[in-house]
Length: 114
Length: 114
Image 1: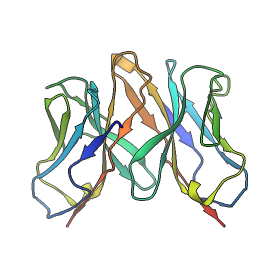
Image 2 (image 1 turned 135 degrees about the horizontal axis):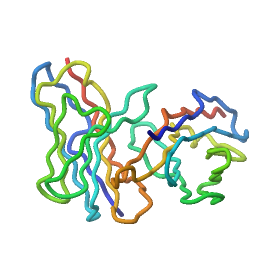
Image 3 (image 1 turned 90 degrees about the horizontal axis):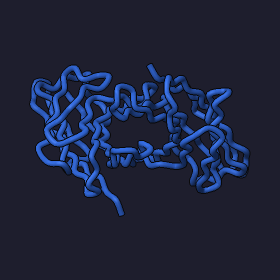
Image 4 (image 1 turned 180 degrees about the vertical axis):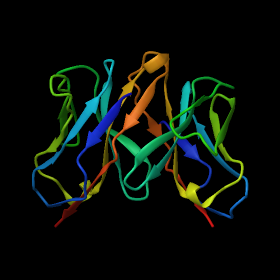
């Protein structure tokens, strides 16, 4: 079975802390994505990466950065967490190339910033 | 830019009732269309997809037809079960500027009662 694994299901952090969310996929997918999910807003794209060491801003990149040092791993970094970053974070990947764009998701990381 | 509009929930149905969740989209290119489902406490998973006009996607008794003339991709099921209770997201995948991008609707929560 294909798998996208997010390192933490639940995190509680304090305002100003640095937060790392890790995501690993075992499908040799080219593209990886970070979304945040909030009630009434659906999924919003934070950053995506179409290759190792490459990254592109999504719709809401402010306050976030990412790292993709290896093809299978895509990390989301909150340099200084704030309460408005309390959310569910979803990592996903797609094969890339001429594929249809079907996303494979991890189970999500629920972050609470106090 | 691209956008997806789906009916707001929550939708509450009795078991064996007929389900329709409306979804319309705006896109400049020729997108692929998807329905994803999120069961409680889990990430999203693909329910069905259609990659070109007039295609019908189907899975687990759910169906949706890609209607280019009405820019719609409505989700239907003839007889819902309690186990179908989840949040349903309509989405489209396109390649604006060459990068694959997936745009989601805000989600529709379905609750099926016995």
